[in-house]
Length: 498
Ligand SMILES: Nc1ncnc2c1ncn2[C@@H]1O[C@H](COP(=O)(O)OP(=O)(O)OP(=O)(O)O)[C@@H](O)[C@H]1O
Ligand SMILES: [Mg+2]
Image 1 (tube, rainbow, N blue to C red):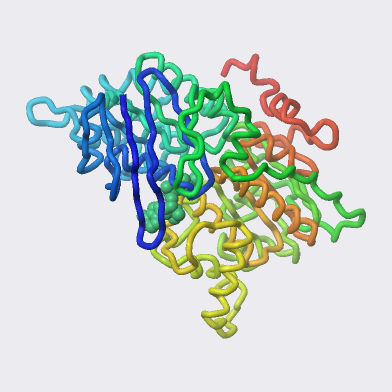
Image 2 (image 1 turned 90 degrees about the vertical axis):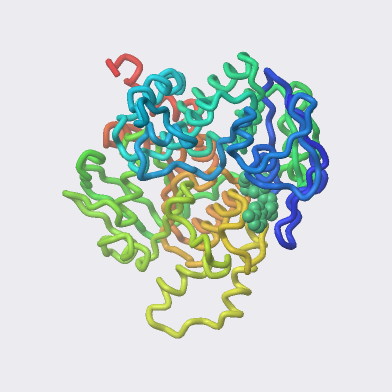
């Protein structure tokens, strides 16, 4: 149905694609995978008219096409849900769904008509947002699903999903996988980019792998590729085994973070927990279970109405800003929301916290030193980009790595992590995990929430499971498995009225 070939794209001195092609057939889910910065988003932006290539061709049903912009591509049946969220936060949900002109009646925008058309698609995705709410107020996962709705409302023949599940909790991701398969059965060609390799291999029938802007596997049936060979193709080398977390020191350096009887209205009910220096403590739960409120309380972003939060020096975080100066690093997978100064060079982003937060009035370090230090982080985390490049020009996954680098540069005493490896490739995930272990081993306390249960099992010394704002279970040792975690998070919900 769609055949792209010989696509070439440079950004300044950066070669994003050199002669890459892809073939999409009606009725298939085609996976596109590769390391952060491999060129995946560039390829799909070209196919969907967002970016213009310097060379190469695209054919739709055998007819050469050249899209001037995304709207033109949409008109020809090619719709994209991009990696960056593109919702208009000040518009309502319904307004967001009709970007190229809302349906009108008698010259007026018809809300009723919008709802009539949107409802079946909203239902299909299991989305039920209040119609008049501003989109910016919705949770990230809902905004992501909303974008998918918007694409489907264009009734595309080719649907491109660039990391659609990187913001979604597990159940929503599973639902989306189901929907995706259904769309293919209806005859759409779906191109699906994801770093969740198991997920994507389950959903897709063929896979294309990019590395450094070149094709290394070209539309191979997923049944013929094992996960190991896929990873090897992506990285150009086999993945390393991950080390188990180092033992918590026998005499840990004392309690680093402690919550005592903490209540956050509507989120946490009299919760007490602590993490020792050197310890990696997991926080698990379904959406709204309260585990994320613990991170917010530690980071000074949620004010307890009762109880106390103590940081390593015994002080309580008074505000988000105060928590940073007390050495708390908060890293979230929602990198768009609270991560980077997109217009500033990478080195400034990476060194911003450490000299603002910890310089405490001291002289600003020499610029060349900051640049040099940033360069070290880039190498360590294998960030693809120049220290002087705008942060906004990095690929999505490399931006996430840059957020991490920024906090690592600040040498925090406490790490509060929320889905830190969302959208990060397998190689970098291992690298990040090693870093977290190293930081813990050097005396930092780590609190981590993750929708990726394997991540919790691999990293944590123990995991606290939350339901309804309380800790209901603690898993460690032999009980710390994905199956036990999932069971514990969901226990009691099967027979509840919903
Ligand atoms: N607007 C831009 N300006 C400059 N460089 C860019 C721009 N967009 C992408 N690049 C560069 O092109 C290369 C490919 O980026 P691309 O976004 O296609 O990667 P990706 O495979 O989608 O990675 P990720 O998994 O991190 O999303 C990267 O080196 C990136 O830094
Ligand atoms: Mg990308």
